[in-house]
Image (tube, rainbow, N blue to C red; front, side, top):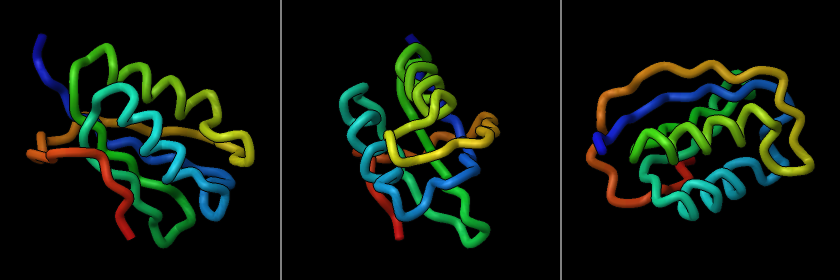
Length: 92
């Protein structure tokens, strides 16, 4: 299976609710690499790299609302260049 990478931008109440930590847990459970990072506009950027099926599962989880205290209004995603990440991190 070929590796894929996506950039997802998650909008809504997604900062200050454990969103990046929960995303990291999901990504690690799926064997993905990349990162989750808060952006200045209040959204969260998620870079996810791995097998297509696992990346799709993370994207579906994001679109379903992520952790219970978050409120996801929309998720925009696009292909991203592979970043050579060794694990999935929270960026600040």
